[in-house]
Amino acid sequence: MTLHAALLDGTRVLEEGGVAVPRLTAEVLLANALGRDRSYLFAHGEHELTELEWLHFGRYLHQRLQGMPTQYITGRQEFYGREFRVTPDVLIPRPETEHVVEVAVRCWQAEAPAPPESEVGQALPSVNRALRILDIGAGSGALGVTLALETGAETWATEISPAAAAVAARNAAALGARVHVVVGDVAAPIAAGSMDLIVSNPPYVPLDQRDGLQREVRDFEPHTALFGGPTGLEIYRRIVDDAPRVLRPGGWLVMELGFSCVDGVREMLGGWREIEVTPDLAGIPRVIAARP
Image 1 (spheres, rainbow, N blue to C red):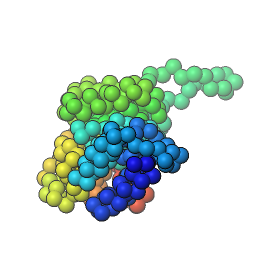
Image 2 (cartoon, rainbow, N blue to C red):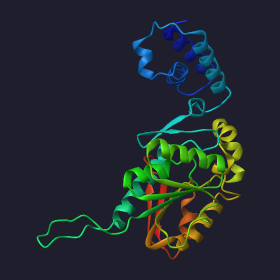
Image 3 (cartoon, rainbow, N blue to C red):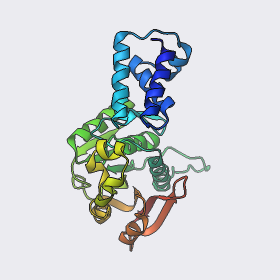
């Protein structure tokens, strides 16, 4: 079978199975079966699939029809312009989480020491200490790795799952990011007064909303990264309560917000300063930032 025919066949199978964006999904799965980029499919439509390539493609189609997310099948997901390895041990990075990066970079820039000036007003290289960032609940490492590369800051990441921590560490190494990944619960392993910026995309889905989730999410993504307790606010509370211990004076806490979480999280931050809520492209409150 040629690539062109396999692509048409795969698209039809996925469409009949009710899979969203069947053509694009078929392209991604077929390219993965060949170990090629998607562009190869369009330039080599008459390429005859080997038996092994066909077997791989058929298995990938079957897995997707069973509900497995495409990212777990290919083992890859793009985030902030970089490719991250993902496994079923970690939450798949979402585009909306990129707003956390944008807000965190803005906060980091506000804290970054200005370079001293010479007598003639020219900026000299800064000799101040490096700023430190902590990513709580690292998962794939998407937040911590991205911020380490975007800011150059020394970055730490905590993750309660050893398997997920291993994925984050591998992504940091593969992308050349200076991230220290520690297995531990929330910020417990982190020394007092050691961080300038804390970021987190915590579990925030209430337990009673489990049945309403898409099958791909409910049945395949790790529940420890999805569910935040009966109300969905439990992990937020633990982060907010411990953040003042970990942050240096003037430091920032930046967290992704789940749907309908903003009021509860804002209430937790009573007494904090400079509380800022940033919406996503759909106008939904997505990121909250504050200083203790």
